[in-house]
Amino acid sequence: MNTIMVTSNGPLECRGEIAIVNADGVVLANETETWLCRCGHSANKPFCDSSHRKAGFRDASTAPAAQPSAEPGPAGVLRVTLRSNGPLRLDGRCEVQHPAVGLIFAGSETALCRCGQSGKKPFCDGTHRQVGFTA
Image 1 (cartoon, rainbow, N blue to C red):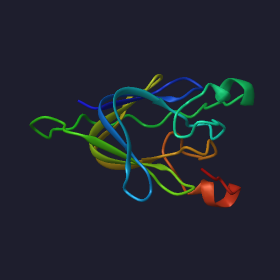
Image 2 (cartoon, helix red, strand yellow; image 1 turned 90 degrees about the vertical axis):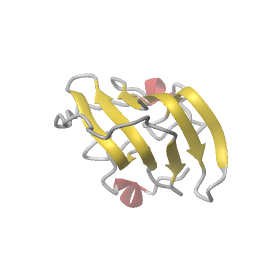
Image 3 (cartoon, rainbow, N blue to C red; image 1 turned 60 degrees about the vertical axis):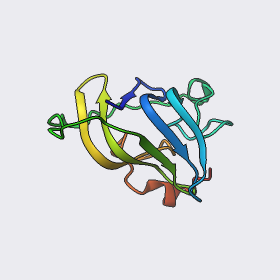
Image 4 (cartoon, rainbow, N blue to C red; image 1 turned 180 degrees about the vertical axis):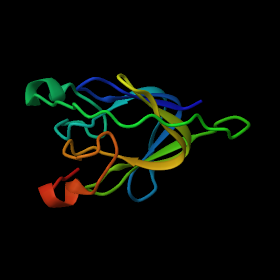
């Protein structure tokens, strides 16, 4: 199963078959383990460079728990598309885990915040538009 772990006040820890894709559809990397920035400050976006520590990034949110996915069969490749100046778009079977709550998403389509400002972290709520996030 492709798994995204929201780390406490840090990046998204991604494990599985992960294809990182730019907004134009070009595959930038194929990974089995990687850490993606969610604070918006990394100089190496979409990857974490530990800028969250210097920026003082904090995420006190606790998303509601979700039910596990009942979809049978192998997970396949999870496409993580870098929306232009926007979120990380996930396409493909995956689970998102939260350190305080456990499973918060199980499915095949969602968007995760990478500007660091969403009011419903780790999910995108469109705040990147209001704050002028660029990536």
